[in-house]
Amino acid sequence: AQTVTQSQPEMSVQEAETVTLSCTYDTSESDYYLFWYKQPPSRQMILVIRQEAYKQQNATENRFSVNFQKAAKSFSLKISDSQLGDAAMYFCAFNEKLTFGTGTRLTIIP
Amino acid sequence: DAGITQSPRHKVTETGTPVTLRCHQTENHRYMYWYRQDPGHGLRLIHYSYGVKDTDKGEVSDGYSVSRSKTEDFLLTLESATSSQTSVYFCAISESSKYTGELFFGEGSRLTVL
Image (tube, rainbow over all chains, first blue to last red; front, top):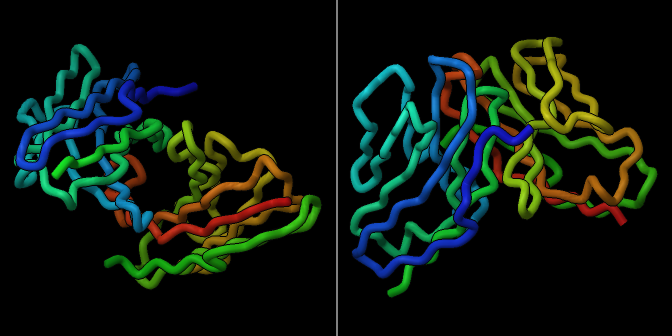
C-alpha cells in the first residue's frame, strides 16, 4: 500500500523565486525519518535533505528547507532562490519499508 | 561520489529469457537495495540485503530473486523476463541502519523486454 503521496506531478517556478513541493505520508510509528531526493536528467539520485521525526526543528540545507508537520503527516520541501540547476524530479521518501513517492517534476523558468 | 557500479547499463532482451543485473560497491556498506523506477510509480523496492547472504523482499519482489555472496556485490535476477519488467533498475547502498541512513544510488540500468 502506498504510504507516501506527492500530489503535484509537475511544478514550475520562475528563476530566483521560491517554490514548495508537497508530500504527505501515513504511519503509526512515532519515530521515523523522512527524506527528499533529487533526480536530475542525468538520472543520478541525490539526497537533498533529511528530517528526523523526533526533532521539532525543521531541517535546512542552504536554499532547501522543509516544513515538517508531524500531526498532519506532512513534509513539504521549500526551495528558495530557485536556480536552473534545480530542475529535476523530486522524490519524497519515508524510511518505513523504504518507500518513495511518485515524484514531482520541477521546471525552472529563466 | 559513492563507488557504486551497475552493469549492464542498458540491455534489451526477449520475453522468457533470464537476466542478471549486477551492483558492485567499493564502500564496504552493509546495506544494499534494488529498486525499479516506472512512470507514475516513482521508485519501488524490489529486494534488499542487510549483509552477506542476508536478504529480504520488498514491495514488488514477485518475479525477481537476489543473491549476495560478497559484501561488494548484489545481484538481481529475473528468472524469466516479462514485458512488465521493462523498467529502469537502480541499486542503492547505505552504511547505517536501513531506516536512518542516506541512500547512495547507482546510475541505473535500463532493461527492455520485448
